[in-house]
Length: 394
Ligand SMILES: Cc1ncc(COP(=O)(O)O)c(C=O)c1O
Image 1: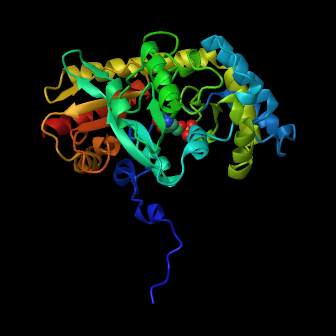
Image 2: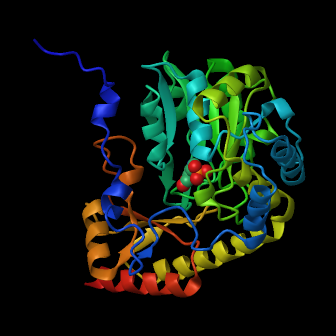
């Protein structure tokens, strides 16, 4: 007799993603220059750390309202008003944990087992893994690489064509990881129109919104969506404020979902860690100068990669408009995981293989790419690029 397996099929089929396949066993090794993950080498600034310490000393160790501490939600309102000129209603602001938990929460509101989510690629692999973990199936639409213009380009017709009867949501990351592509205001308006007409939600991942090189901040869905649109806007403290380990981000959700969001918040985590939320308040209230420094540091890293790519005849890229990644194509490369593993072994530089960002299994278009995070100390970044250059010649 065969015993029924109670474990969901998705759980049994998960494999480590391609970045993990390269990094496993090597994370934290001080001899490695790690450019493989999406984080800067800067420690969180002291004024943010001090605010969290103060919260602990003030005894802020108890449960708070599951959507987030009122003080933080108010700070999010004020920061959003300052950066975007829009003040989202308090009932729309949620702080479940980091952006990843915001994304999972948004997926939980709309995805039933067997439903589809259109994911715009190349995309950070954790997103399709989260879709699968909630029982959904990712349907991939790839940005076109317009070589003539030297740009990544969104084809809205492809998005429309990918929407079927079981499609519940579109996942759009802008500024994009790994491409640095940035959506335009017109494209945002068109996607909101598609969302209304076709009855699909939009999950707008804007965690790199202020790491933007062509203005104060990237175009945002908050500029165009009404509070009743089925649009979820995700942001994070991880990137712009160097707080990856804090696990705090926020979600602006449709207003009518406030009771559901409160319920999901309780079921998932009862909100982010309270003293970390107070670090986040300091980040929003005092952190604008730090963001400006961070953008300049990243811009410098981007320029260094631009010079490096220009000097290597096997390399090409689209200069990113936002975020802090270089997505670099290596002429002739067919096995990005093998190359990244070999690069690590021979040069001690950790990069993410393009295979990680592919549009589903069997899609080989990203195999010739490598992604590296340039939000690093210029000396170390320079050293890493020099070693990669030598490896490319070998
Ligand atoms: C596009 C994108 N979304 C979400 C996240 C997750 O951010 P958090 O650390 O807040 O979970 C990342 C982190 O790399 C990311 O690149």
